[in-house]
Amino acid sequence: MPTASQLRDSTQIVLPRETLEGLESQLDEEFTVTIVPDGDDRCRIIGSPVEIKDASEFLTRHGVTVR
Image 1 (cartoon, rainbow, N blue to C red):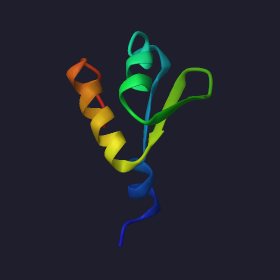
Image 2 (cartoon, one colour):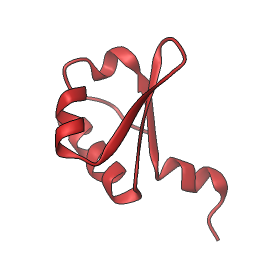
Image 3 (cartoon, rainbow, N blue to C red):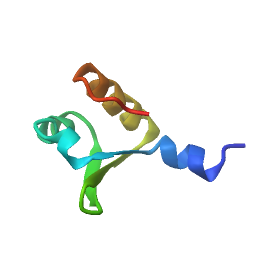
Image 4 (tube, one colour):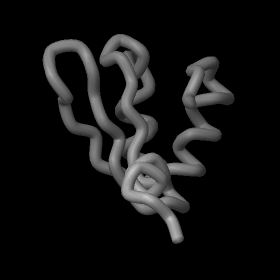
């Protein structure tokens, strides 16, 4: 049975805000995700596990390291 942290990790990506500069509009257009601020210097990309996986692959192709 999945734990809460496993479920959370499959439905969100947390990144430094500057990492998304220039990519935020493309993410918003290509994927069904919500991008919200998380504190002063981070943002969360929230979506279904499928969308998060695809968004993660997109970010990786654009040089962003996603854990």
